[in-house]
Length: 390
Image 1 (tube, rainbow, N blue to C red):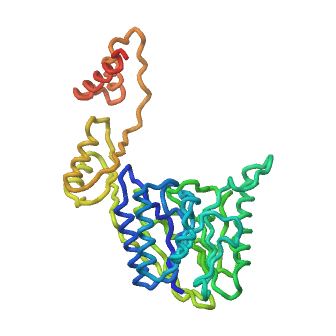
Image 2: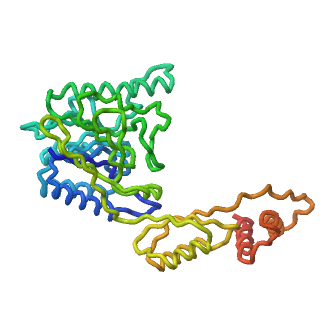
Image 3: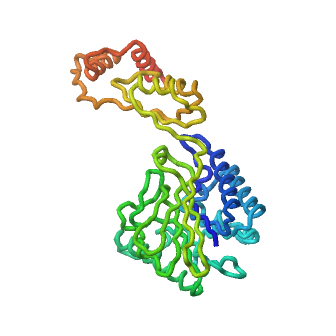
C-alpha cells in the first residue's frame, strides 16, 4: 500500500499579520497532484490542521474544499488527527459524515478502539493507530504530585495507549502509529508551541511498541527522523515555513510503500515547492539599501536585520520603500544598536527644559554629538502631547 505522510498544515496562519491563504491553497493543490501522480492509497495528516482552535470561515472553506476534491478526484483513504493548535471537538464534529468519503478524523480518544482503523476496511492491508494530541490536563489529578512525577505519568499514558492500540491490531498486518507530540531527540524551532525541550515530558523512541512498521509524527516543523527504533520514526514537518528561521531547509512529505508482509519496499522524500519565498537581509544601512536596489525581490517576503550606530527617524520607512519599489514586501525591520553606556547623571539644579535634558542624554550616549533637527523636533512634539491637558 502506498502511503503519504504529512502534518502541521497550520491553515490560517499569519506571518507578521500577512494572510497566507494563497500559500496554503497552492500547497493543497500540489498535495492533490502528488497523490494522483504517485497513486497514493492512504494519506496521513498528523495534527495541527489549523493554526487556531477557531479558524476563520475562509480557512475552514479551504480545508473542506480540499477534502471534497480528495474524495472526488482520488481513490485514497485519509486519516486526520487533531494537534495542539486544533479544537479536537471542532475538527471531529463531522467525522461520521466524512467517513462516507473515506476520510477518518480523530480529535478525542476515550479508548484505544476509537483510534485503530484497518485500510481498506473491507479487506485490510494495513492498520493505523490515529492518536491525536493528548494534553497533560486530561490526566486524573493526583494530590501532592511533583511536575516530574506528572510528566512521567504523562509518558506512561502514551506508552500504554500505543501498546493497547497495537494489541488491538491483527497479527501479521503492517502497523502504522500516528502522533502529535515531542519525542526525545527532535530538533525544534521557535514556531512550535508547548514543546518541552528539557525532555521530562518527552516520549522516548523506545516507548513505542515493537512490531511496528512506521511512526508518522507531527508537532515539530522541521522534517526529521528520530533514532532509537528498528523502524522509521519521522516528523514530516510543516509544508510552508511558519517563521523566517525555517527557511534554511526544504519542506517535505514522505512517500512510503508497504508490502502485505509489513516490509517497507519504498521510502522516499518528496520536496515541497516554495510557494512564497522568505528572505532575511542583514547589514548596515548602506549594505541593506544596496541589496534592495540591486536584488530581485518580486513577490518575496523580507525580514531586515539592520545595524545602526545611532537611532535614525524614518529609516524603516526608507527600507520598506526601497524593497517595495523592487516588488518585495518587508514584514519586519529589526534594528540593532551598539550597547549603550551608563546614562549621564544630571544634577537637579541643571534640569531646565526637557529638550536640554534630551540633548545632554544624546551627547552622553553618542560620542558628544547632538541630536539632529528632525529628532529634536520629534521629541518636542512628544513633550507637547504629554503636557497637553486631558
